[in-house]
Length: 255
Image 1: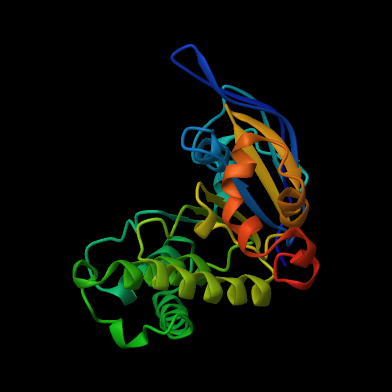
Image 2 (image 1 turned 180 degrees about the horizontal axis):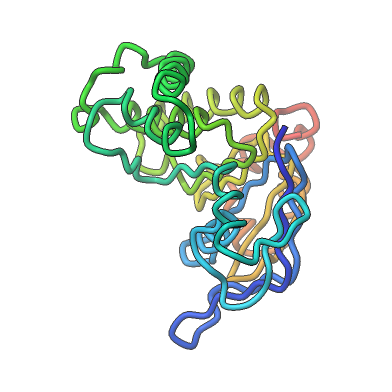
């Protein structure tokens, strides 16, 4: 089961400009949260603060109800998290090594780590690529390795920062569907950042809309589509509204 994470009065200031200002945010265990917004809205900054990849200028992050106030507590929390980025960020070597190495770094024996790596390459449908050098993988194959690497460490919270943006549409749709099954079966808490409609997980429990470093909306996908109360939301959901129609949302996957 996933874990809870909260932030209180978080701000991030760079070069005298506030790029993130979130007074309060609570994500419950097992929730799938989509964070949407235009480029530069603050989505990735919010994710990196939650994932303890950057330190906020002010404010506090809590994980499982405990404040992460020092390097040791943050390191322990990071061991229960995994992040998948737009770029796969794979190490030199083969796919099996790339999935196994984070497990080893988190304390697994080499044998256990490689067993987990083989299992997750199989779950992602790429066990035949285990000994393949990663520099020869396609974009979709590389992201499958990244997802296998993320799930192999058995995270309680999974952060995804536009992981499928650079992929072609058929590959993106296929991976999104497979990711839905993995998230639901594992119960992991997931926070998914995207700036385009094709990248949004419509199985999310909740959607945060960001603009100018602020969370401007916090609701379900269906309610945001039915009542797109900002120019950004109207533009973002235009294709859905024209293709599906609000009267059919209750009967669709979006409902």
